[in-house]
Image (cartoon, rainbow, N blue to C red; front, side, top):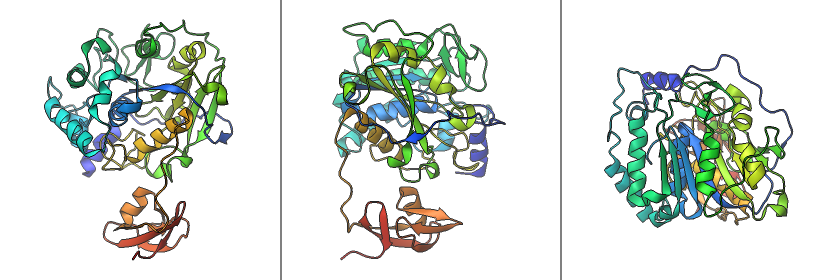
Length: 416
């Protein structure tokens, strides 16, 4: 990624916050085990792209997807220039190339089919049963409607139109629309939550879950459930080096604690860039409208959280939809994707995947070992996780063989 592109990326989705807002002050605990079901996901902006990725990669276990100001699967093709100029207008306005059909949907469909064929995403047959809700603000200058219309075309290739709802008549800027919180509807700026006299969270949850039985009316403004701040390091080693925060949030409505969670639904909520706790505190978790519907309909809400990495990689705490951290970012094996899936599995009672057997060896550059979570960086030196053996400089030129001898424990060595 060129420095010029990284500077453009730093401008993406608004200016960096000058003052960091405080996150919810509470004890960080392990994510509780539950037995929720009927999994769905939604997101705004980079969270919208991530929601699409997750819904495609894990289509066999996802019942519905809500997308606000996102775009089609693999739109960026792993390239930040494409992400900021073709899939959005978050780079220089003079370089923006967004237009109808500009994402080349037919190519993205072919890539999806290829990934499904080689098993890096679930079979595309799983998409057909999903219910899709989309919103594109007619005043959105960062992800114009042409991109979301391409997403509609992408979904129509796999899903019957009766299962797709596309709202594009709301004069909203680039933000999460609510009916009771945020900036003016046409304003562009932090916290990227706008009061548009429209409850987007409620609309998407009703579309995804409201058939055959409609959802109950939303609950009161005061939460009846409880917020839990949980440890995300249990699902991704050294998450802050990979664009995810050390902790995330869970909202548990009445009647969904522990084993009582059986029969509750699970919805994953993915915020956008500059909406992580470092930038806006708990505003997205508490003020986007999801919790009131969760209270009255027994919907557990998982709020995974991102974190900025550094000014040259992911300064705006975006989800990885353009390969800033991981070439497998849009596949089941992508670091952030796999981390969210492990969280979902814990909340639904699904068995975790088996760990790699002890004795497994991996030879790679020190840089790749650190990115993969087998090692960590300390003062520009790569150290093997567990043993803390020095592997030399953390760069792409020095290659090391690491042998796994226990859970998250690696030594420098070789395998027969």
